Amino acid sequence: MSTLQARPALPFIQTLIPALVLAGLSGAVVHQAGFLAGPPAEAALYAPQTVTIEPRQFSYRADGEYLRGSHVIDAPMATVDESRPLTIMKYQVAHSDYDHCVADGACKAAEGVHQIRENMPVTGVSYDDAQAYAAWLSRKTGETWSLPTDEQLAFAAGTGFPDDAFGLDPDSRNPALRWLADYKREAAERSKRDPVPRIRGSFGENEFGLADFGGNIWEWTDTCHRRVQVDGEGTALRDEPSCGVYVTVGNHRSPMTSFVRDPKGGGCAVGTPPDNLGFRLVKSTRWYAPLISRLRDRGFPV
Image (cartoon, one colour):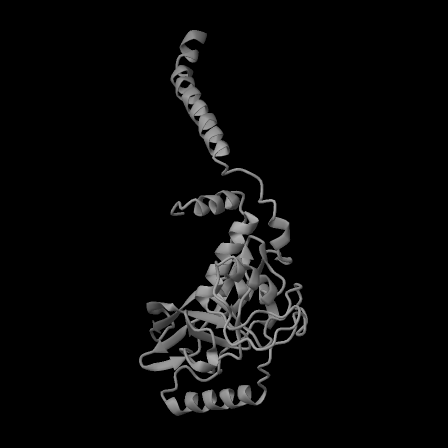
């Protein structure tokens, strides 16, 4: 009886042993290739100060331009049960940090900068510039840094995240109501413009310790602007992202063309242009993030 019970386990053991040997050999190859090496010796020199946003349920106004028929309506509220913490830069990227990337030849110099004081956030940078800096910082630290999505920025910004709704009747077919509301908002925003960048920390911190969000620097996100066609019940019929135009967030959302560095020169897809364009990054804390970073460094398409 015991002999009959032992036989079915033999094929499993015969399969398991080669798999374990292969895993061990693969691990050794990966280690020898340096994929599992520790962080670069210079990593601490470039590591930014971060805050961690703990998991919670939160609500925010969805991004995008929503239409019912030919009429623009307010985007719906989105409720998210975020189950993972988010590690994000406490401050926007500083000029001094960005200039290290420029000195290495990995980033283009920021545009329109006339006076730089110590600890000033970098401005005059495009989405493409922010992506280049994220790739450079990932190489320097051995970590994985990227632009936040609109949802991640809403998660980190908390009560400071803007609500772009006009609060108009979605069933109204009078376009003049929205035009008038849009005009009033733009006039109010122009009257309180304060376009000169200030040193980091000038606009205070939110309830999670995130600094300067909603000041006079709009932050690039990795979210493509989209137009969403909905039916009478609010169900999306078409969701058309326009990647090449990305959402920036400050006092309000401003979709911007990816190569624009000075918003006052044009490139704003919808609404009032930002005062300045800057950015902050999020760090992946998944266990395999350093391996992904090293594979990218070596040209692997991951």
